[in-house]
Image (cartoon, rainbow, N blue to C red; front, side, top):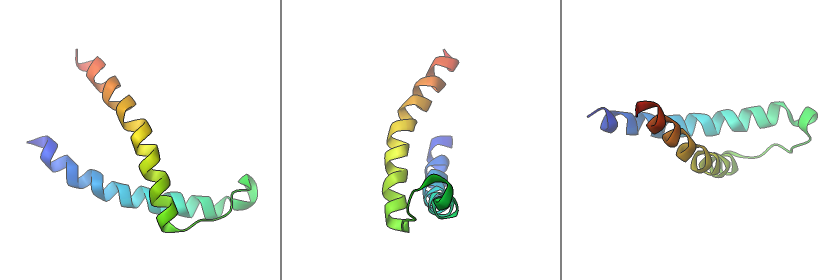
Amino acid sequence: MRTYTRLPAAGGMFFVSAWLLMLFAGATTLDTGVRPFGYLTSMVITIGLWLVVAPAIGATARKRRS
């Protein structure tokens, strides 16, 4: 049952993390040399990051339980 309650929370955190990525990219533009980008681009980058990081987190969590 906990899995079903975590899914909406993960969805909400997706939008928050995309928004934070957009803010930090704009705030560090002079230091990093990355041009500021919009919210939609930030969402695409966040999806890519989640697709890369989520399997690693899942594999680590499974290994700890065993």
